[in-house]
Length: 350
Image (cartoon, rainbow, N blue to C red; front, side, top):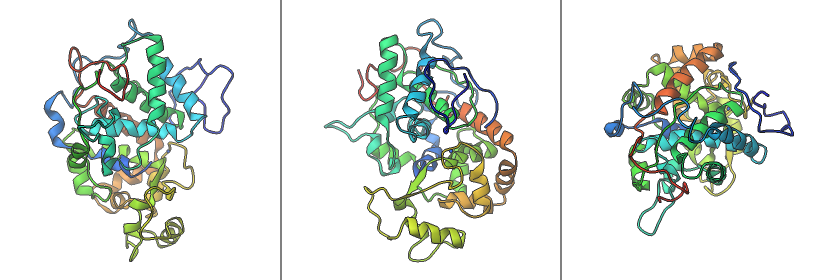
């Protein structure tokens, strides 16, 4: 059967999946995590991929690994619809701090505060569903599939679940034993109000070019932004790059210049198709209806405007560049071979 669409009901047998190859959206943290830093080159190749990764890495050691992840993503979507974009966001957040090594999933201890505690990771959630996927994998193949690969596979499948493109990813990553901290995340992730220059510069250091970077930021087509990261564009005066009528709507969503960060106060990135991974993000920013400063800035900047325009008009081009960017990002600075470990529980080192 095909990947289910958000409006469809789950079948009686969600275990039978086939890939759908046709082309077919959460919040501030996705921008932050896209802004990856140059320091991360220490462990592996960037442009050509990391030695030790391969397609179908688990075909003999855990043949059902990718199927199990898909089944769990499917199952979880019908429990909590926002989980699909949470899985996708995890890819960016994990790969942003010392590479794709499941460092994001580690919990704080008495000795350190984990990456999750960083303000730059504000809004990250649904980690409990990652644990559910790990439990299912451990039941099938104990000690075989890494949490780092789980993050990549579930993120890929989350995009497909939301109607985005399905694409192959290499596996064979291993999990870090190093406890990176909130300070690491604070240092290596850009703030929510970063500009075009900082965004493009950091992406270029990853060998991710401009159209690929702009396609990756198109993930903002799904999800939402908390008012904490919106009010600086609304109060005391409205950001002149923000569509005036849209600003009025956002003030309804965020009526106070001092929102409670624990309250459910947010605006969806795309009001039209908020849970579909499509190219509406670009159509919105052309109308200056992007939620973050960077969103509208990409349309206003002559270096990036042509890509925004083309992706708004050509969904296939958006998908093509998105897949190309993800292929580079998901192989960034990984651990393979005898490096790191395969965690039994994604929240703790063995």
